[in-house]
Amino acid sequence: MSAESVKSGIAAVDEYLDTGYAKVVGMSSRFAAAVCCGLLRLQTDLGVKGPVAEIGTFEGRFFIALAHALADGEKALGIDLFDWPNPQVIDRFEANCAKHGVPEAKRITWRADSRTMKPEDLLAKLGGARVRLFHVDGEHSRHALTRDLELATTVLGEGGVIVLDDMLHPGYPTLMIAVQDYLQRHPEMVVLCIIDRETIVAATKFVICQAAWFKRYEEKLLEAFKDNVWPLGADFEPHWCLVLSLDTRLADIV
Ligand SMILES: C[S@@+](CC[C@H](N)C(=O)[O-])C[C@H]1O[C@@H](n2cnc3c(N)ncnc32)[C@H](O)[C@@H]1O
Image (cartoon, rainbow, N blue to C red; front, side):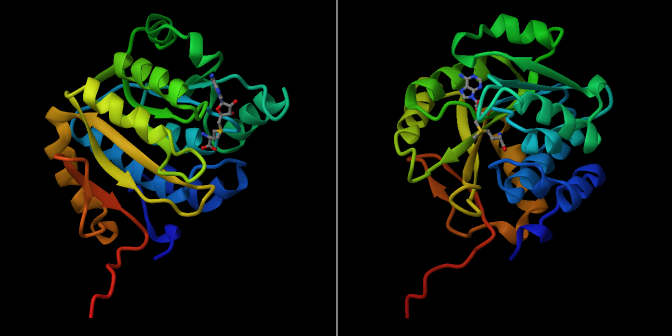
């Protein structure tokens, strides 16, 4: 199955995924964008409102998809140091947003360091609105992920979800330790689903949600992405969650 066949169900998102996504330099997979934007659609259906936020916006590839999935009046907050690989990255980000249909009124660009960011400052940027989807894709160290996860959890709204990039990636094995420690510190949070990698660059994402929302979201995701459900699921001992993949085969055992 190819990523092109997976749709978010939001016309503006799917148009961007078809015509713009691959042209914006970035590292997130198209498959993950379709699933996360599909999840934003499900949130809207369930009455979950609010902005989205991203640490590690880079040139805007994933950010633009999220922004297209928002309801009227909601905003997308893009946070980055905007200094890598050169200071012009912020200009490319702004140009990509303009080119791919995310007007200034719908987005907030914030050049900032998540290492020193206070939750109250982030909420002030959003006029006090709590976040419904937070994509964490900044510094890939255990310490930084721990800090970014706490920040995201503090500013999350009711029914909000946190999406973590580059999970289970061979280059960042210690990120899993940060996630396990986080889940132990926060029994009110669980992994909703694992979005399998497309390539080593466009790697696996985890989606984390409030435990009280797990069943509702799981049921809706199972229905919306039924062709992508890997039958065995993921074991977080004792919690089990969905695995969504472009490859749903099981091993041949006879
Ligand atoms: C892998 S790139 C993100 C890719 C992008 N989300 C996408 O989907 O294409 C990681 C980004 O995180 C940013 N970053 C790293 N550490 C950061 C920090 N402490 N605060 C804010 N941004 C940071 C980097 O500047 C870089 O642009």
